[in-house]
Length: 315
Image (cartoon, rainbow, N blue to C red; front, side, top):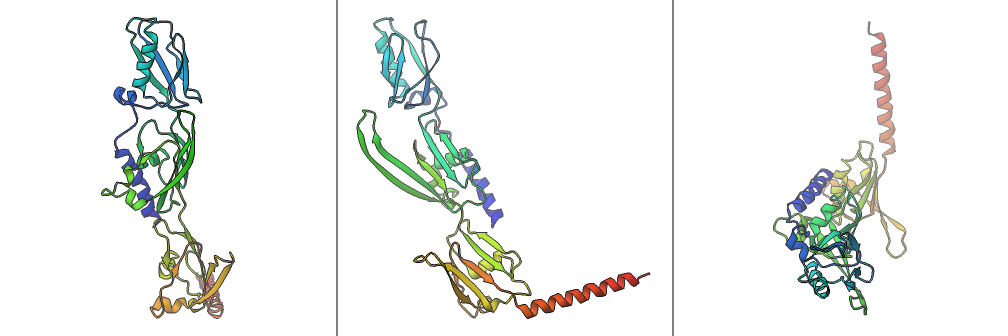
């Protein structure tokens, strides 16, 4: 199962890499980019030395200050619109000013990618980016990733005019299977500035005791698993197991304590009882058949001793 999930991880990164790059890399794309606080721009005026061609950071109020131009609102305007407004202000000093504005550093479109990804952190969208592209920025999923991706979006707060609007929160969940499906549009879902993309870790069920591979087993793309599947994940029971005396330990949602329930795993394995469904954090305990375990250990000791005698007597 883990091998399959790692393949899905690589598929996600490759899927995102195949998507068209929406960042404003070309001149026309950059001219349509809407500026915001934290972005850094350079302003160049042809045949003019009054305005130095050096980076200017848009301040928290969304404004910039330029010689001859003064303070000017830049946030909420596209690069093309800002060029036009600077040009209009310069006309009283320069005949037919030719102004060009370039974005030298993007800082106004942060998106947070958290949880079971290879490189969690805050990334700049640099224009329009899809969910698949944002996940690719975070280097894709870790093997512990669950089967769903959660996008939390915020709207409201202070707008460009300074008015305070109510903050609204919305949560969208996307299945990883849909994200990787060629027929699904999940991967093309647009991510907006200040969104939070969370990849929860996969839920875990525990199989402990007399099994070949005791411990926690991740349910990467599932919310539950049957007892038979859980035993298969644990690679089966040992000869020393007492499956008819197995126990299921599950947390009671009302008390928060684990409740122990008897489970005849032997009958389940033989098809004589219902295949019980295990939920996240359930524990399946397969106890030891003490007489059988003692007998097997004694037999092993006798075999080892006999082998040692044979080897010692061999010329």
